[in-house]
Length: 268
Image (cartoon, rainbow, N blue to C red; front, side, top):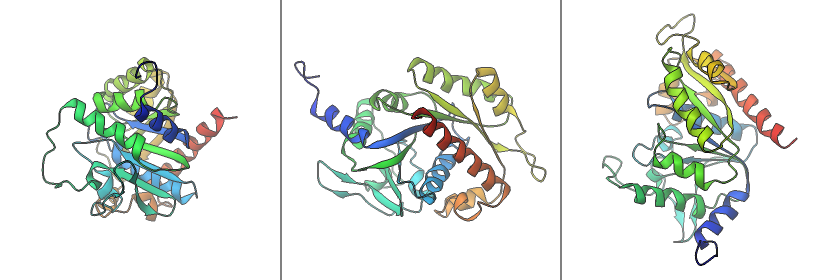
């Protein structure tokens, strides 16, 4: 606020976000649970359903979304006051610090205010126009970047918590759930990623579902281990694009359908 008036950037941010029907932040209590993989597949699948979708990579220090979507060599266009996001496929737009043009091998040694300023600029200046969905891939934990997303997007539809099957998943999920509760953010549900299958047994099975039950949160579903998941992301084409009929692809589709159902339900 400036002398009783809203800051111009805040006004622009609010108006920009108002053009997006559903805004979802994807959280995790720790790194390495496949949060960005889930975000990329979710956004791609929504676009494949002819839903106009944007994905914002809010991880300043470890932006993975551009590589997973095959746009790591693409750069933003636009003016000083407006940033054009990168078109990935029809109905899918993306934005990340990696699309600014920084050396991908260089560490961004930024203090909190610089990171928060960049995220706020992305929210206010990226020309998303009218979207059905905006997926925000956040860095792990509950630090400044995640807090900024939670506070600056006033009408955030909700958050999705990604965790792993181990029993300790409850500890990590509780942090994200507690964060959402303190900021009064709705929790769309918990996703258990990297679950054991009949063919692959590595991380266990059921921990994410138990965590959701103990925390009193909806369980969106689990995604089984599939050795093609990682190379799909590394090659810039999310798993759901080519393997939707495989078991993990069907599980992803079910999770996406439940997410859409939740969003439609809040407007019913």
